[in-house]
Amino acid sequence: MVQAQIRPSRDLRNNYPEVVRTVKKHDFAVITNNGVGELVAISIEDFADYQEYRHQRYIYNELQKSKANLADPKTKLIPQEEAMELLKKQREARKHV
Image 1 (cartoon, rainbow, N blue to C red):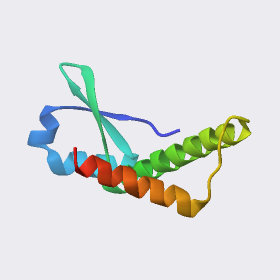
Image 2: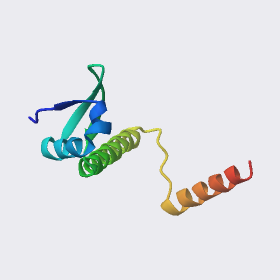
Image 3: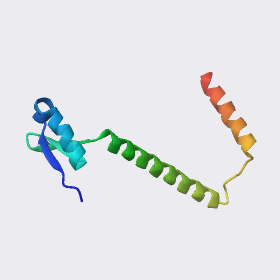
Image 4: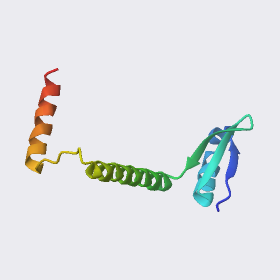
């Protein structure tokens, strides 16, 4: 497990290059204000990885909901072309509101 580096918020202003090196070396830094954690600084690469992870979790959860809907006997399935036409009509109706 990675050890968090704790830095006071004044370091963002006074020692920014050092904070950047800390984040790159230790993966993240906890920034404090008056000794209380305020935020976490991570590298842009780690942020991109986190965003990708969140997107994958979202897709997984939506697929799980879809599987549950398919298992419901009340679910009505329609052909793709019909579904696309229905969505197109709904989008057009929203434009005119």
